[in-house]
Amino acid sequence: MADDLYVAVAGAVGRLQQLDQTANNLANADTIGFKRLRSAFSAALEAAARDLEGERIAGAGASVFAVDGAPAIDLRPGPVDATGRGLDAAIDGPGYFVLQAPDGPLYTRAGHFIVGTDGNLASPDGLPVQGDGGPIAVGAREVTIAANGAVVDTAGETIGRLRLVDFADPGALRADGGNRLRADGAAPTDVEAARLVPASVERSNVEPVEEMAGLVELQRHFEIVMRALQSDDQLRERLLQEVSA
Image (cartoon, rainbow, N blue to C red; front, side, top):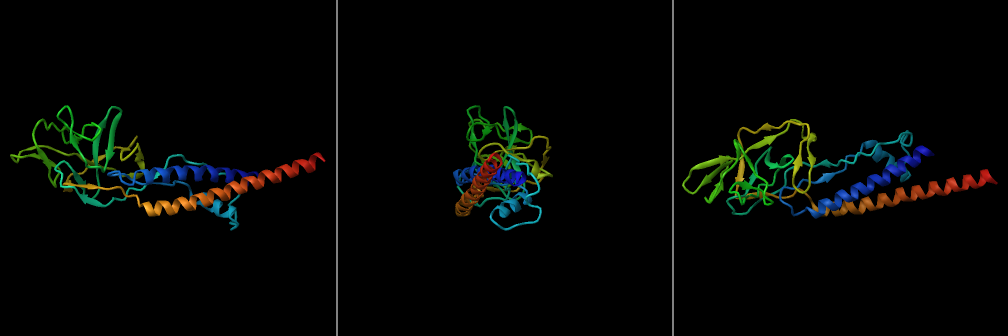
């Protein structure tokens, strides 16, 4: 009975975390380059949830499952939309742009850039975009991003080249807010032959209809585990009454 209680509690906590992830996905359905968060729970925990619905699975109630608070990331690319803007670029294939944050590099598929107040190519919130040799100094020049990652001015001069990196183990990446990823403890490798779609951006890979359907299902599962907890509490109360009688 104790094991079943622990499974129910783990299930309730897990469903709350999944609800939070789904809400975050829906909030970022229109965020350029956003990657959908998904549950990182083990298949065994899912089996335990089915057990609570009345589908008995041998051994499902015999273990206590740890709840990992770090969500997994769906790294599949989102759709590419043309913007006609020279400082936009979508990655065609693997790789990530590199932004230099004060506490270390961030990685993103969001190729929507501006010229910062210091004259360097930057993200919309001012983080420098890394080129092959560091920040890309644009200054007052009008530039566009070419398909090979070159940042080119109106005279055709290449003033820098966007750095693209990839990871041997994508599972090392974790979400760092919005459309940014962090790779603590994982070393990136440079993508030698960058392939970009100029004047375009990669949209979020969130499917709102799918997320809404999942939200309904999560609410149903949460109600199931809460009923299981209530039933367990009632059973314990009856046992205490019988023992004390």
